[in-house]
Length: 320
Image 1 (cartoon, rainbow, N blue to C red):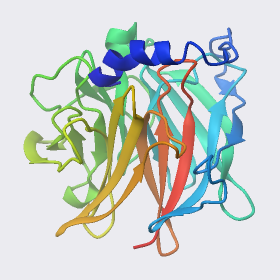
Image 2: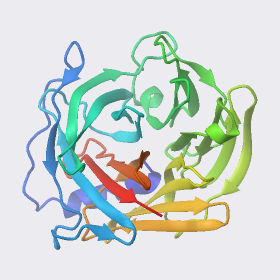
Image 3: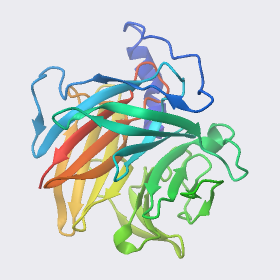
């Protein structure tokens, strides 16, 4: 969650005061075994033009609003990865881990989630992380060997969660001073640089850091943003030396604005921009999965546990 979002939250609540009251959040926390049923309500790319299915070279491959009556914890999702076998892995800024299988319809479009399970991320002592100060997980990188790196804000750090389970251990993190809600939001494996390599990106600064588990972190480039109001919230390394960046801005008048920017070795290759009247919310999670002739991008929104926001998962097929 960015500082600009926190600053504008009060204004957003005032603007929403006259809107119909949504249903209350479920009162139950998490089932004992973590298994939950996730409902998926289809959403159009543009509610004002329901038949619209493409923005430039980005073809809309379906979108859903996610919810669950089984838990009050399916909120605040802040980063996402899609595994090669089609499973979704996501973290929340309250220290939860969501795992589920992506469900596609007969046309191969995103239809929902199945076999979902949610659980608390453990701390170094093996116990659930205590409180927001320690549990504000923002970035997720699934490494080639299955280990998972998670970056945290407030108490800024990166931890490695072993693929075989068990408590995490500290991983190299950029040695910089960050504002409480402006830390390492973006985190991604960097397999071309090595099996233990990863990239971390600061939200407010949009600066990249190249890290290795065996060698620490070194400063890299600063991302070219559409404007200073945009923060870097997610990134993913792509084939052919390309990188996808998800950038987000918000203000009370224009609401959420999102840019998915694809850069290559010679500069920008393509971009997707979303703002009203398109279906948009506080998107800050990005995943990329291979498809025939291109990539499928998934973007996931963090509803900040607010009733006036939604947990949206949208898919776009991009063929360069």
